[in-house]
Image 1 (cartoon, rainbow over the protein chains, first blue to last red):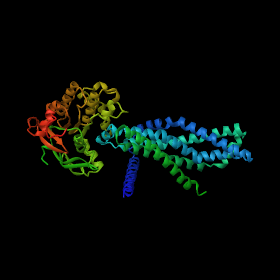
Image 2: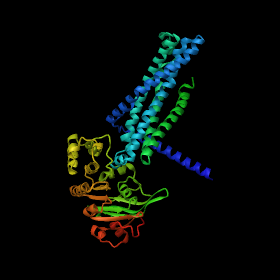
Image 3: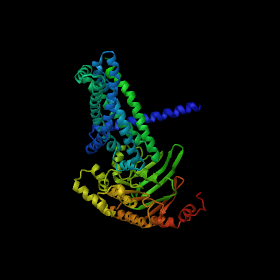
Image 4: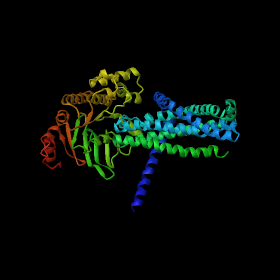
Length: 258
Length: 252
């Protein structure tokens, strides 16, 4: 009976969470459709959330590209197919690791910041104050962050793809003596423009996940400073799980039929 | 509803899970008067303000403001109704990222098409009313507690609402600032010619500004009347609360 009760409570909590986040998604889409957008705030958020993440995204992508190149070059040279390393690095970066790693890094840095900021606003009654003034917290806070991430995450992904390939090319040349021209030629054969676009579509979906989860966790904060801490942790954990799960589904849908 | 009544709580019950906050609570807010609500900490006084502002819905009963029932009203309609009401929060709840001037002007910028100069004029006027014109460009974290509360008042009155709700405006302030805040509330009532509800524990301040006093105990209003009637009430609950005695029907 106790087990059944716990299952019931868990199910209700899950459905409440689902209902809350769907309602948030609906309201933010409605605000976007009705063009209720605070452009100045969107610009500020784009700068803070996007540009602020550039360095860490570039560093993680650079080292990831270098590692893929190091591992694949070692194997490829042994089997006499070193000319394919460029394709392997670019293929992996553009289709999978570029969008996903960028999203994971941004979820850790930005998703947590969004949840913490909005959560603090909840516990200091600033969200109630907005509602009391007849202002929608979704239009006021969620939409600018959603738009900012939807613009900046694909841009960050493009930078991540480029730096990852450059890092891979450098290691391929330094470690396996693979000519950059051979590396680029292999990369161009392995990856088409549609792969880049599909990678950016993934980035766009991940941006929405990070923004909606971060904002929802922030808005549903309860219980003072400890609650803000819980909201922040949950925002990162839930975002990362959803990013990994969604990445698999999107890879299957976008690339799986090839 | 009697036109002399601006707002009414009608047989309100509010509970969160097993925890009952208000139980069959009814209260009339007289138009043009200052009504002070007193009661023990955690009695649900601030909840009453949130009900009157439409921020929360009761489990049962009705909340009327200027003849409109706020219960089961869609959020979009509530947004319109809230234009008549303003809530001055206990800790001001100003937005950290905006200056005091931007905070005070926010409802005007978002709800009106007034030109910037006109908004600036109205914000200056509201800040002047609370004696804070010089802090227009300051950030909230640069102000003292008393100044923050007054800045919150300025934001609450800038749209000239008909009903202003003050949540513990004097809590945590020294006696001099408490007097200043009380004077400010009285002055703002005169300026707006409106109705006010004040939640407070400060009896000196309450008996200076209140036209009517209501006492909340165990989720219901147990005493209500004009200021002098409550001050001289023989109700043992009121007597114990006013004297601060540990002996009486209110368990300590």
